[in-house]
Structures are given as C-alpha cells and as structure tokens.
Length: 162
Image 1 (cartoon, rainbow, N blue to C red):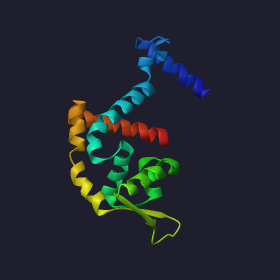
Image 2: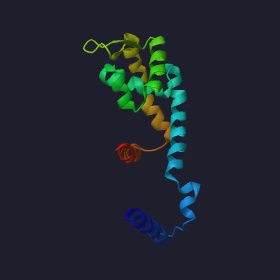
Image 3: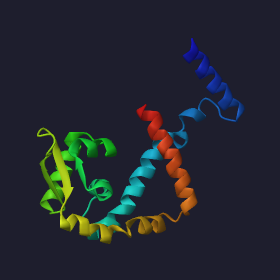
C-alpha cells in the first residue's frame, strides 16, 4: 500500500507544481535521458584531448586510478571504476601492449593479477596533467558549477548502487 500511496503523493506533488501526468512522460523531463546525452557529450569532449596521449576515455580512467596508487589488482581497479572483468580485461591488455602498464601475479596472492605502471606509464602522467583543464575549458562551465554537478552525480551513483 505504501508504494501506491507514494506514487499518489508524487503525482499530486507534480500536479501541484504545474505538471500534468502527460508531462511526466515527456522525453525532455527524463533524468535518464539527460544523463545519457550529457555522458556521451562529455566523453566526446575528451576524445580530441586524449588522442595525442594515445588513450581512449576508458583507458584514461584506468590510468587515473594507477597514477593515484601505482599498483592495484585487477579486482581493485574494477571496483574503483565500476567495471566488470569482461570490460576491464581488454582495456588492460591494450594498455599493456602500449607499454604503459605491466600485469603480473600478485606477490601476496598468486590468484590475483597486480597491475603496475611502467616508466612510460608514469611519464604519461606529466602530459595528462592538462587534460582536466582542457576539458573544463571546452565545457565552458565554471569550476563551482562543475563541483556542484559532481556532488549531485556522486549522490546519484550512491543512490543507485546501494
């Protein structure tokens, strides 16, 4: 009964704020649509910035985790990036072929794969330092606005993974 009551309250709240039931099904009112389009567009902004570094956006995310910690297991990287092994494994193989990382058995746990940066991978960090600044410039939004957006999106992530 609570779900029915909650839906009724939500509907009546929306109606009080000038929304009709039909408004609730408008594409431009859907959070999922706004997130999907924003995500695609922001990732597309990274493409020309990352291209000179020889990285795709997902590879850049892996490198960010390793630049913070240098040595992580595949499982830890997957957890940090919310990526499953089937998605992460090909990324790591490409980064290894590019000479940016090494994958070896973890010394403390033979079953785990440790991922570490090579000298080339560490050196790439210096070139990547400008990536965030370039992306912020391309977005044309101020830092406070982006921090606020990050806070809200982090709340969405927590709400959807709890």
